[in-house]
Image 1 (cartoon, rainbow, N blue to C red):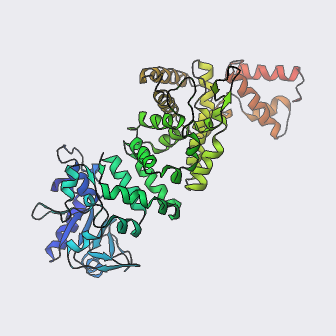
Image 2: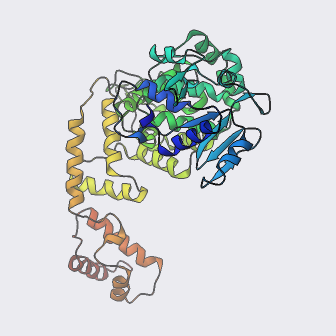
Image 3: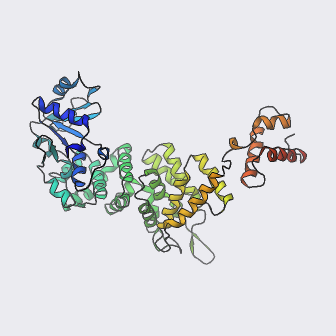
Length: 453
């Protein structure tokens, strides 16, 4: 396994050991290596989370590396962590109420960690795994288990519950009974956790390829409403005559359809794309319909993602915009050009729109489609893109100077209004985006006395 470790990490380990200190790789890197140990690693960058634990104190670490390393930063006495060129080197420690105290052995250190699978150390000198909590056995048996008393581990840091659910979904682990009940019992502690920490766990969970199970586990632990409060409006909601599943299950299924894409923003959009279906409309046949649902869910999406989870404005706007656009027609060149104008304004790639449409269709249990239908739409969109149609006013073959010269105008908002009118005519295929056609249409506008002369 040594060849998987970067040269920088190896140098730190060897220097600590050569100077008489104990030093191990621990945590996420070891977990990932053991989980994938039957696979072939083509690129050691597949694993990036190389944390080191050592018997050396922060003062000893700093003294040892300050001359050779580019950057040595001690993260305070309360943490007992030193960053060497960005690589975390932690001193053996035991956690107290408000701080950490130096521990004397690795066994003491791993006893205060969260899960057995995260407390496995790797001795590179002897090429051995050091495992005091049966983490390797749990990993082999696909079991997630807290170290020691589960309730104590949770009250030390309630975010560990979300981390556990993320690990269980990412590695397809069964949650051990005592761990399961402790998480369920303490789930409401998450309400007092800063939104930014919750958001970080959500992003990590949405980046891996089993987000669907993460969501179903949240639902099973009755945490979904704590993280995404407005999704409860979709629970049990009839999906209408075109669906055999509830709206919430449809949204979960839609996420599963694109689970391997790694685009967490797109998965959020997929999760929330039908938020507007909380509002049911009955037609004249007393059938459930959701006319205009894509235009009315934005307020609830904004609350969940912006106010509740503190996502950035850019991410919220991306999710709201895709939710609003996901029903747009794309069966003709004209409709695609209109869609591309909207996507360009929001800086959303056409690929994301197509994948969202695919996830929406695939999430329909009753009439699910395969990717070939979405691929046809994507190819048509690419064909339109290759024709290089204008997607904003700046793409027109004439500019504001041409308009001002034709109408003998000074710079004013009216110039922009004229350009927008021309742009709309080009998108509607009323005129072509050529200088000749656009100038000719300006003549028509002048003759028609539309208020621009």
